[in-house]
Each structure stands twice: as structure tokens, then as C-alpha cells.
Image (tube, rainbow, N blue to C red; front, side):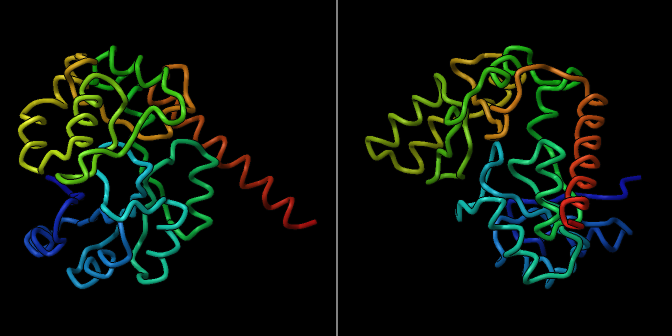
Length: 229
């Protein structure tokens, strides 16, 4: 059966008790130290602290991972997993230096060879530059979108002062599926993290893991040598 469940986008108390009563380890995703405290109160087993560099839905605080990890570490002793803007061994080492025990990586695997995302979406991600994603839909649920057709529709609506209900109507249903899994880059919702701009070549999941672990170990050893001087 299921051994570990990650929950997010709500009160950690909602499912934690039920899941733990069935022997399941619960990890909750937070975007602030305030919600990290709530995780402790709810009895979760570990926390993912996700900075707003991340793709998709983000916290309203817009706190970067570099600031969020030490802030969360200060208020909890629970195992801490860093997320948002991490896709390399260097990023993982930085996060763990700030107080995390591990890293959650989404963006780089989203355009891996084995990913179920559409090739149109993967290729678009591998062409992104800095600034090609932006946090939008803040009146509904802050979401990092790739600039494109749907992004421009949202931007125009927000610029004219669209209400939350109007934005929900514009969003409709199935936009994310249309964009990321069906490959409609004009009408679909495209979500990816800022760190996508670092990559130009598609790799397999195994190659990605190997690269990350190798870089992490090499940099860790280099850091030890520098500190011993």
C-alpha cells in the first residue's frame, strides 16, 4: 500500500490525522514559517518548504527559497525538504547548507525523456530564458506561467482589473492538460519553474539523477577543501 503522502494547498490538519492513523507518513508543502508551525501542530512527519521560484501554484508570500529555508528551519525541527528553483547539485548543496535535509526537484524532471508531458511543452521549456515565466492569477491562486498565448490573455484581463470570478471563468477547466499534456502552446496553461532557463538539452531521468548527485558530491568535496585552508 501507500507508505508516504505529500499534501499541499490547505490546512495540514485536514488529512494528517486520518493518514497517520493508517500508518502513512505525511509530508506537507508550505510557503511560509507560519504554515510550518501549523504542520508541527498537525503532527506531520516532514515539511517541504517551497519558494516562489517554483513552477505552478505558489504561496502568496512570494518568498524565495534562499530566504524561506532558513526561516522555516528556525521554527521547526521536523525533517525539511527544500523546493523551488532547485535542479542541480549546486542548488541541492545550497539548500542543505541553509538547513534542509533534502531537495524536491520538479521542473527538471518535467521535461525529462520519460516525462508524460507533451514534446511541444518540453521543447518550449528547453528554450526558455530568464524572465520567460511569471507569477500570475494572484486573485485566484498564484501560479507561475510560461509567457505565451494563455499568459497574455491572463495579463490583459488582470491589467483591466478582472475580478477573481472573471479570472476563474477565463481559466476554465482543463487548461493545464491542454497545454502541458496535449501540447497546445497557445491556448493551454503552461507551468514550469524559473530554473528551466538553465537547461537546453533533454536527458533521461537516470542522467539527471547522475548529474545532480555527481555535482553535489564534487562541490561538497571542494567546499571541504576550501574550508580547511
